[in-house]
Amino acid sequence: MNGKKIQFSFLLILLLITSILVFFILKPFIYVLVFAGVFSVIFKNLHRRILKMTNGKANVSAGLTTGVIVLCIVLPFSLVAVQIFTEISRLYGSLSESGGQLGLMPTINNLLTRLHNFAPSVFNFSFNPSEIFKQVTNWLVNNLGGIFSNVTGIVTGLFIFIMGLFYLLKDGTELKLAVINISPLRDGDDEIIFDKLKLAINSVIKGNIFVALIQGAVATIGLIIFGVPNPFLWGSMAVMSALIPAVGTSLVMVPSIIYLFLIGHNIQGIGLILWYVLAVSMIDNFIGPKIVSRGIKVHPFIIFLSIMGGLAYFGIAGFLLGPLLVSILFTLFDIYFSFEKKNFE
View 1 (cartoon, rainbow, N blue to C red):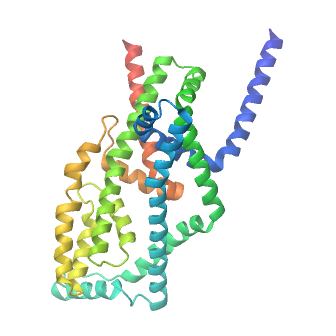
View 2: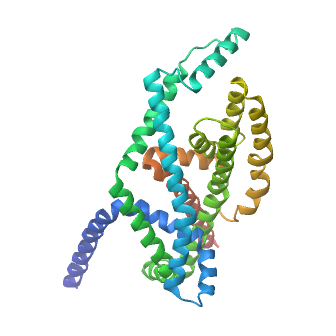
View 3: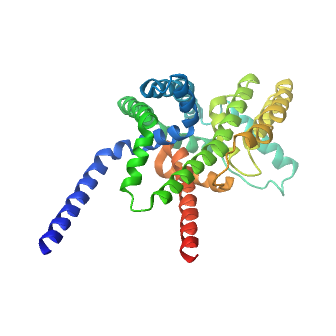
């Protein structure tokens, strides 16, 4: 008996050491694999439809689904990300070289001066907006620059993402069964966990982030049409502000409208107002309810905080990882309380 205990303990030690080593081997690609897993869940229905069209050919359907996702989602977002980084770099360069005397800064300074002259007691404050913009853009350049400068890392990460997405779509069911077999929980409980995680991913990604991305895209189109400088940069800010309850994209759109009127582009300003009212602000009312999935509901402000915290902790990957981890936490709490309820019954 003692010999069996020693053998079992030795096996556990080997298993622990090997697991730690494998973790460090896979650590550089964990974020990419998580993204692949999220995309495989979101586009599972698309994969099923393509699977039916190909008469159940797993390799062909997984390849076609992966190709559609890369061409329609990954590639456009990559191009937009490059454009955003370019605009940030240009803005930071103009602020550094001119001391904040180019572009938007003089307009902001004139507006603050007018407000102070109009009501000195109310607007009795002083700060340097160009310095604030310079610090913000400097932070963005430093954090995003490393990503774009590491071309090898980008190509490797993209390759791992595509391969991971392909095999998760192709062999996702078998992988799920393998996890269920390894898990010490009952198979029915494992199925509940997988179902709730899937609902949580769809609820948060589709119901919050996807709607915010649509609003940001529509806002960016409006900014381009009506001539607001750095439209992709401010459009990305509109995506973030769309996640703030009771504020939304107005945090970006209203200052953009004011800017157009201040520089004398009244027609463009009126056009942007109409675009904001008829296009951007209506997405929440019409598109949002159709996209939101039933499942784990997380308050939009919690989603916003999780995104900001995720960006601070994980970098650019935190835009998805932050709210995903929060949604998983809510899912696990829900499962925990359901287990406790079963135990007391």
